[in-house]
Image 1 (spheres, rainbow, N blue to C red):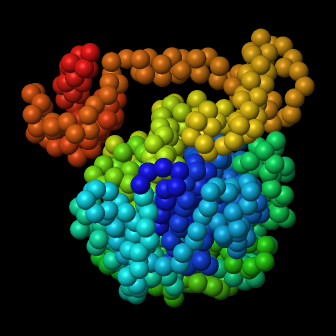
Image 2: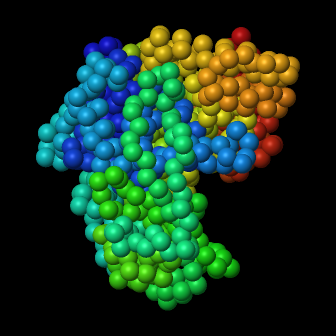
Image 3: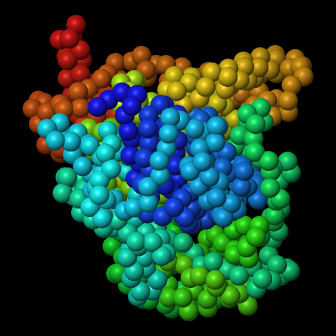
Length: 593
């Protein structure tokens, strides 16, 4: 049954699940969230940070689409910095450390109490493990989910946001423990169920470092570098959108590994789950473990280790840069070779997580299954790495599940409109054989996609989808108009007039890139209007297209592209194959006319 009374079931309450639930509710449908534990809602199980290079862009875009993560990060931030300050405005990025306990509490309160800021028609939270998806009899569509205890939850659409729980296994040295996180059971039955439905699953791996007792760190060691928070603290929520109060800010510190660290790691590589053969999944190339760093970058004399407090009321410190699956005793030994950590005590050893992910090429740009109507996927189950990437997908999947049920146009962000568009397009077009992480280099239109103009880029899309209200939309449009006027004055070398410093910074960035932006926008307009981006039927039988090699036909059949522009981004598609598909698309359009 599709309509305003429809129900979206969201499986999981991590970063993707939270955004999916809130987005679906804002669009105007009932939501049921199923999570393994109410206590771990919104948990930040790895690093205690939100944002960073390109990731900060994603958070600003989530905030501009009415999402949750930016506001939660602002409410729980205890240390903030703008990265890439010395570089151009397009690649500057906000990164904050959050208080892990407070972040989880803020998320639970938002989901369970539904404050007026985020509330939709209604969100119900159910504790339980999902074992499978129910198929509505005779329709070929999703009809809800089945729990491990045999009970069922009816729903008209389902969003799967299982994180690292799908077939999850934890590795510390030779120890192997089923789980998605320490102390939490994996979703084994659901993984087998998805295989039975025909989804291709692959094994991926991620990891986390040990947690250190901050009382045993020598912060007075001259080799440790102080990293104070910036003042004023950077925020994700615009100053006129009622940002939450700021918590007390704390210092972070920077230290480094050394030759002794690397020697110890090399001597015990055989005991690492990554190098003993115990793990078959691919790890994130751009966030390697200390074992990978020592092996792959053998010429490096040292590697950075950021000592990041995990909260205002805890002594736990996160040593960012030394994730590992070595035995606990080896972890303690190599950590004690690092400046400032000679007497450090481990509160918990690090570990690797191996888990299942689907091939995202089986999804459309709405993150819906191409073959099973009503089933959506978001987060690490799609092969990504990182809280921000997960949250961005959750918002897109949750909003689109609700929009589909309400028979309204889908929410799709183009590559020229946002990093979210780049992320989704990369996933559904190219897939990934290792955890996908967002970088500014992935965005060909990154001069257009700055953090500072995310609201101007996305407010119209957010308002049309029902993700933000009229008052907020008008504020965003007014900001954009004010910035445009100030930027024009700066370009003419005139006084832009009075205005808040944060808006003047936006205007200066826009004026700085003015000439480049004009050229980049012309390129966007050319590609949009060119025959190079014609629509394609996703059910095209490429095996019957004359002139296509069997390899090209196979690649196209696997991705099932919806436009010739998407075809051009499929790895392995030659210019000749692309021309063949163009000809087919032009002929199809001619036949329609």
